[in-house]
Length: 281
Image (cartoon, rainbow, N blue to C red; front, top):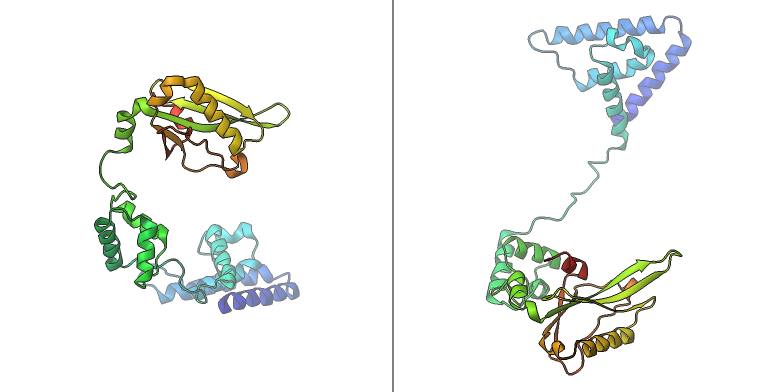
């Protein structure tokens, strides 16, 4: 910062001299540049010319007194180099690197990673939040997201199932007993948004649009599920799993999930939305 202020003061003083001696300013500045360049070359005759920060400082300050079209003839560097030196000295005023504390989250210790993996393997029903809570009780401060990243990098699946059939294997085995439910929305010409509750039978790919409304509520969704159960009749007994999105947009759907029909053995499982199901064959 001090160097930047000194650089700006030097430019101001040189500009004052240019006002007082306007006729000979350009010629005198060229002579000063050439003299200083000769001094630099004499100092480094045995090797390639290397400009020190003080040399760049002097050249950049004198560049304000010489027309830019003559920079290539006068200065040892290209006009782009001179502008880069000028910007570097000006930018030093806003450089607060020395005042800045070390930023960023420190890396997780190897011993703590080993402990996280040990807890996950010895407790198959513990998820990343449970593991993070146990570590907090032991005095280890670590975010739940960090625990999840460590488990995911190690190839450990989320609790409670870390072994057994995969999601694809489950869908293939239970294809005839799965029905997916989700909300679809469409905007009218007047800008009004309507929501439709849709059910998709995974085995037959048959789509059921049970109702359309502008304000879906839980009671409305329950009634639509009952109407669908009545329409399916005996086929409803073969449906064992109801898949609904993992997260619902509460601003649009008001947290509505169609529950299983009362008295049925259908279990609700969080899964992908209806859009991903409609694209599968």
